[in-house]
Image (cartoon, rainbow, N blue to C red; front, side, top):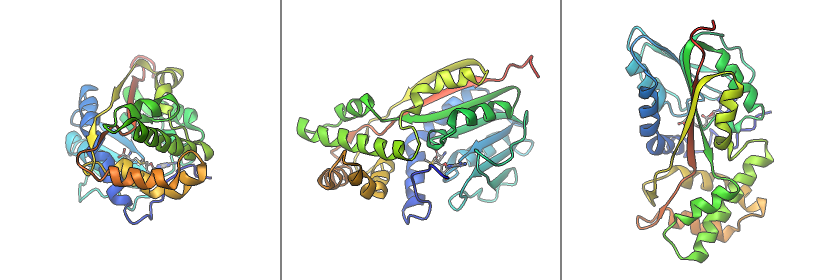
Length: 269
Ligand SMILES: C[S@@+](CC[C@H](N)C(=O)[O-])C[C@H]1O[C@@H](n2cnc3c(N)ncnc32)[C@H](O)[C@@H]1O
């Protein structure tokens, strides 16, 4: 059973996935470059979404390198003609995955959705070549983090409560289907338990303005019915949030993105 909360067939899904790239690709690219990404590397992009990172990786590794970009649903994932980019329909939980095959594996906002997420991280670690790097980036917006995110909204205290309720409600929707809205907090432990070396992590938290950021807004719009059904937020909260996030004067924090990385020991084949 899939634990992915979002519907790839939703008519604005391509835009929602692209908006996620607009907010987080810059930080992801810096981290990927920092791991030594270079021409000739073999890379795996897991749950590639709209394909922004997959295409960028393909351009970085060049014709001598190769990028395999996977997703359970590849309708929004297009290589735009790159010959070193293979797009494959693939479930990272259950479909076969070569071991010791990749110099670099990247997954962003994917593993948190999977019920067997810690096992998937171990699977990804086993798919690394000796010396290869795994970069996993996962959100945190549940529990106390919902209050922290709301504190950054430049609105009166009463409306900050609506922001917190919205994040708590989306977290509730995730938890109800077996996903983890604060998986980012666990990344250091999970990467360490997967046997990786040099494990470290950092947060990316850009303050955005309404109208310019469509990922949080699109997620709330798509999940609106389930948000209200959770009982954590009202239909009025949803309407207010959708209106506020369309206004350029509204500043807020989307979910924190926690980036964690680690390396397969080069001396242990
Ligand atoms: C929130 S999107 C993130 C997309 C992309 N990684 C990004 O950050 O721009 C999550 C993606 O994971 C994919 N996904 C969900 N469950 C998956 C699974 N079991 N195996 C592979 N991909 C999965 C979804 O189809 C979706 O494209």
